[in-house]
Image 1 (cartoon, rainbow, N blue to C red):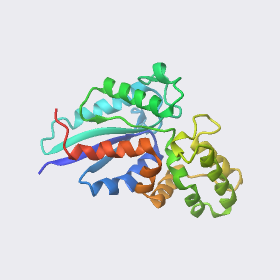
Image 2 (cartoon, rainbow, N blue to C red):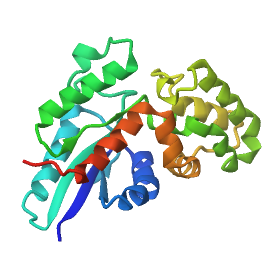
Image 3 (spheres, one colour):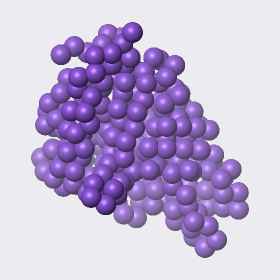
Image 4 (cartoon, helix red, strand yellow):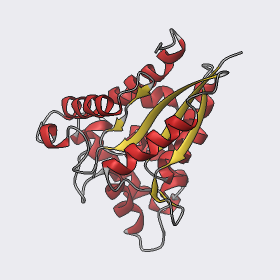
Length: 237
């Protein structure tokens, strides 16, 4: 029996925990086995997490692809979960497309350039608009369960979504206003808490649920659809 395996290269611990705790159970029901891996920032020091350069990401993908290339009982596919926010300037397509105002057009062009450079029919590029924490804004009030003493500050984050016409993926791309920066400012502004990004990201998105995340976030929904398409029908070499 052939097993369909999706290998996901994650930018950081927040993305990896989401993959393991939220996405993996969902896709297992579709017949897809999920394996995840953090980017290596230094293999010599065994340090992982953080996207520093495109070459770093390409090297990790290439090594992973080669390591599973000849497993006859398994069909391996690959994808990524990287943030558009702070994406390295040497990433394929960044020089040509970074100035495009329409976030959806920009990220799709960068993903296509990424796919062209990797050049594998089993690769599904994905870059999150604009950052993983955008998914949490699908219902940011769920964060109150993690930080009940910050309920007023968390509720005020809901006003951010109103300014972006209810679209979490459009919450923007600057060091002050990216989704995670807004959340950290709300939580740590109380000066009593240290915001736990990996835990809170997984807990909140799990509470929201994949159907709501997909309904609210078009680009994320398209990625899940592309993943599901690998089993019906499967890609061929």
